[in-house]
Length: 203
Image (tube, rainbow, N blue to C red; front, side):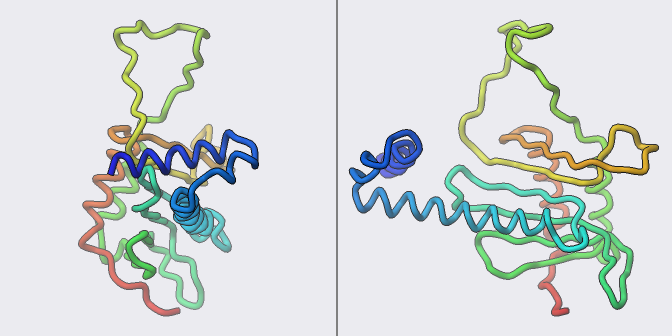
């Protein structure tokens, strides 16, 4: 298994770093594995981008999680139901996963846990900018070890701003690996909402 993963990684690095002539030296198995990897991530990115750029801003918060190889991913979208002809003006959510082509949904009217999880976002610790060799450097003893493998947890929202009193909002996106604040929030959110998901109703 380790040898197979190494072959895929070598193929990917060869494609990114070497000229086109070197790419032709990949074996058919390596090329097939690399192409499959790219296709998995293409589908994942497409689903995530559709949520972020939803018509009329349907979703105002989008969370996504993907493993290193794109074998398993989820996209959870949150927004207020303003869809005609009978908007409820309640918060709703939708989930899509790599394991199924079907979408599932829930509403705050049927799942009170939704509002609790969204409220937790307002106190989510945000990352700080820490450039190397600039300002006050952390002593080496407290610099955390980097995490090179795991899940990519990514949170985007258009409901952010520099001042809560301002009328205009800004987009913000944060990401983190396993154990980061955004990953821990997502773990709790997914567990809390799991009993509430139902098949998406036809419009």
